[in-house]
Image (tube, rainbow, N blue to C red):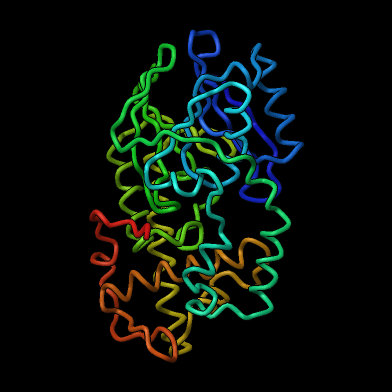
Length: 331
């Protein structure tokens, strides 16, 4: 397995593309990077260093639908006739025409529901419009479900569904020399905590979904994980637990904001959590605040009133952070 690092100035920093089976009969990529010209040439150069071109790729395994992971899949498929695999819950976001953040935002009235000011909403839409080209050419995809297996060279990969950041986010488990390892996509990142709530508005009860995925990573007892951004994680269990603790602390902060301010919408809470927001964070900030508020509402801790979310009782954080299966709303 080889790792190719690609530049990314739009999202969480360097993207990682993993090349599997470069010396085998079948060659596969895990993710592809955004579809801008600079990233395209970086990927071509990275593949060429291993004696490969787009035309040599037999399969693309996508961890999720976001453009910084799937943007170049269509171009690779066009040059190689590669099979592009994605979890069934994310297929609609990748297939011909796709669905953009803008369409999801407008379809679900997120700006109104979250209280995003008109000027900030316009700033976000302008930002997303300027980066529309990173979507790339839509591929034809083959869907898979949790537990399905893929053979690439001497690697046997198992799909591990890890929803939260997106509805269909999936890692790929394989046996390394020292134990099980995981291509984690954006389910587990070494520096940032993956956004929940704004990154994919289709996910129902997004915080609970993501906490369940983190629990599943802990249960997997992986010796190493290979994230979609930046460098490998040498102790995935510890990192997953750090992120669980982070969200528990964030929930406490959300409760403190409501206790101090009184009723507030998701945008107001996000301003207390994150300060001034710009670009993609205009979506991710209130989306993350919403994910915590929604979890608290489902536990009866807050009520969503005409004035905003209103604190009704002190939270039982053990109940709030209970991990159960959650549904994905893909209407």
